[in-house]
Image (tube, rainbow, N blue to C red; front, top):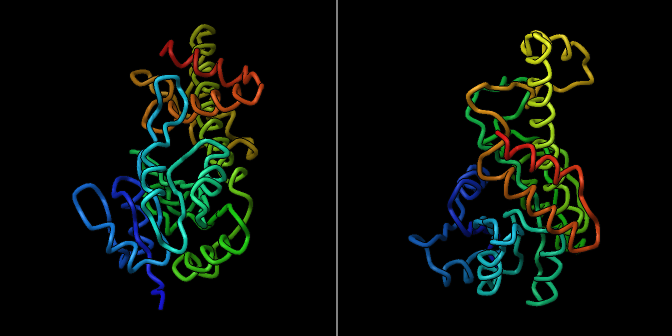
Length: 258
């Protein structure tokens, strides 16, 4: 009889975030847990391992693939950010029920008002859940999350490639917005205008979202673990299918100036 239990594969930033949703989950990482325990007791394994940037700028999903290879749970959910098409490729290669769900756990260090923005480090507060894959598999995984996230959250099922691209679109937009605001910071400075005053006047229009619009003189451009690698990865993916992402390439080049 299959136990309705979740296992977390990888216990870094994303794994710890998933642990808030599933505090009773089986934990597996380099220094904790065992593969046998996961495969013998879990119905769903959530893969939360790193996907670093490869030498050519693409997404290195080798650690994800290694985990998927040894996992033998009824369902596998990839939470690690991977290039569009990766989940479908693994599903066909390993003949396993694999889905993908974009993760929105953030690294932000500054305060965000909880009445307006969800806590970037707490997925319980995000208010929505996306899962992509074969519909019967995605529906079962959605049910497992719905029991923890509750009836008020928004749930969406799609195909895995669309779900993967959704994550890259999110991070590419964040990076682009940062560069846009940094550019206007420089324009304002050349014109003798205060960017702080300019920003506040601009933000009076409610169509403009405040997040990612502050510019700090001693910390220009975007950085962190996700934006640089994810923008690079979607550029490489775009090129691999014959599209030249000129805007995103320009964003990366401008960011190098900072």
